[in-house]
Image (cartoon, rainbow, N blue to C red; front, top):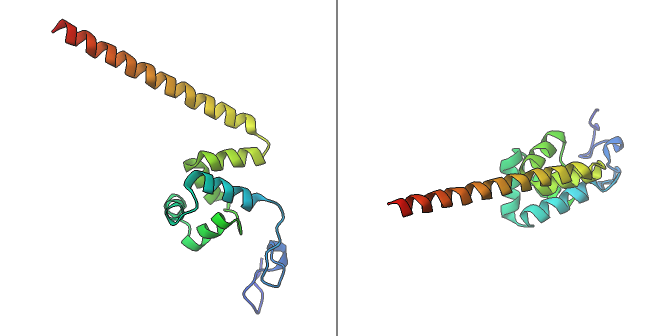
Length: 132
């Protein structure tokens, strides 16, 4: 890819229409923006959180929140690592909702296991209190 000799816009093949506008080739940016807003809200704190997660520039992250642009591959991975909403949106766009169901099921199994462990510890504590 080469930059234009004059001007401040990228060539058309990267989604710019040459007049400073952006051609949308789909709803990727919009969907990620909605997922970020569901996950973190539409606030400055949410932007700062995503900056910390990804290491991206604050202006770049604001563009993700607005849906103007979507994150690149490395940034998308970092977002999916930290946000179940982004992960679910990505899997839905890829037609792999079944994987999200499996992830939620594994999370539920862990939560149940943790709850059972806590109940067993309480029972053990009650038993030692009665023995004393």
